[in-house]
Amino acid sequence: MLKRMKTSWGSHTFSIAVLRLWLGITWVYAGWYKATDPQFLTPNTSGYIGTQLANYQLNSPISFLLRHMVEHAGIVGLFVMLSEFAIGFATLSGFMLVYASLGGLLMSATLWLSASWTVKPYFLGSDTAYMVMWAVLLGSIFKSSRKLKLPNFTDRREVISLASIAGLSILGVVIGKAFTRKAQSNLQSQSSSSSSQAIAKVSDISIGKAIHIKDAQGAPGYIFRTKAGVFAYSAICTHQGCTVNFNSDNSHFQCPCHGAEFDPANGAKVLAGPAPSPLTKIKISVQGNNIFLA
Image (tube, rainbow, N blue to C red):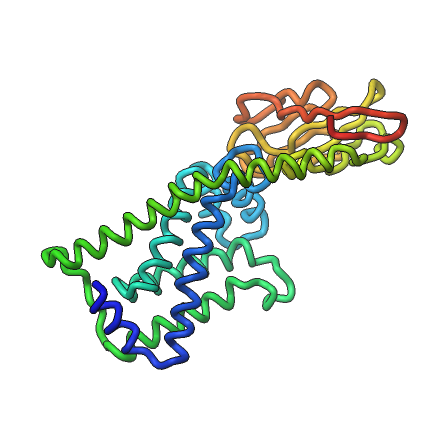
C-alpha cells in the first residue's frame, strides 16, 4: 500500500499534488468536524442535519431530493460523515483515487445546489470552488491514465486497502463522537452565560404575534404573546425536524415540509398535519418588560 501511495503521488505535477493534499486534508477535517459536533445528529437542535436540510429545501432546485433526505436525516448524516472521511483518506492514500474524486465532485455539487444555492454573491459559497477543484483533479487523473480502473477484489492487497479506508472512516466517526461530550460542555457553558441577557422585550411583541428567538443551544424558536402573557416554543417541527413558520394571518405555526399546523395560543397543540405532538416549550422568565431564557 505504501508503494502504491508513493507511485500515486509521484504521478502528479507539483500543483496537482498540492491540490490533492488540500482536498484530502479538508475532507477528513469535514468528517471530523461533523463527528465532533454535538448537534449534527441530535434532533430538535439548530445544527441537526434534518433541520439544515429542511431549511435548504425551501429554495433549493433539488428540493424534491432534500425532502426525502429530511425523512431519513439521521441515516443521511451518518452517511455524509463516513463519506467525507472515506473520500479524504482515499484521496490522501491514492487508493481508488478516481472514485474518491468523483465522490467529492458529486458531494460538492449537491452542497452547491442546497447549502450554497442562495449565497450571494456566488463566490462566497465555497462549494462552487470545491466543485472546480475536484473536477481539475479528476481531469488530471484521466489525462494521465486515460482509463477508468475498477478495483480488483480478487487481489488481497486491494481488499486490504479498501478495508483500511472503511476502517479508518468508521474509526474517525467513533473517535469524533468520543470528543462530543467536551464540545457539549463548552456549548452549555456558553448558553449559561447568554441566559443572563434579555432575549426580547414584551412591548416589542403585539398580542397575537410572534418573534424569532434562539434557545440556550442556539436552536430556532418563537415567543408568542397573548392577553395572558408570553409563551416560547421551539421552531423545530415534531414530525421530521423542519423549521416551522409563523402565519400572521391566522396566528398559527405552520411547517413548510409536510403541512403540520400548531396553535401557539393553546400550548402549540397540533391542529393539522402529521406531527405527533405539540411544539416543545422553551422555558422563559419575564422581569418587568424584559424576557429571559430560564
